[in-house]
Length: 179
Image (cartoon, rainbow, N blue to C red; front, side, top):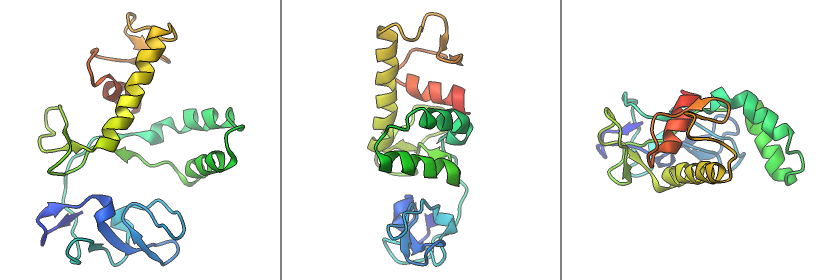
């Protein structure tokens, strides 16, 4: 969502409104009152949390982690880990039952880590998003070093292909599997 008064795209958390599920005040990403995960465009009475004006929709391109394409794998994985702490297991089960949503990896911000891809000038990863991708990359390198997966064959686990061995290996893996 874009705020004309502030002249910028707003992060989801900078949009405030009413939760469509419980009617309490909520931010654009979640409702603290009922725990619902939200989208800012679905908030009634949406306002910019910086200036109080109503934001508008403007087209913009972003990179997404297509979690929805991993539903079956995630559901199977969850079922094989029923010994997790009850709250972690039940919350994960709830997210799958309610319907997974693709997660944006980029933002329209003036701070953050530049996205090193053509067509995404001005787009940024935030430190949290980059940290998640780096953690995935570390896991891949660990698995390679332990011989659990092979990089020399051009495939990584379940025929997930990669195009290059760069610091953005994790992004490429996600794109090939999820996009």
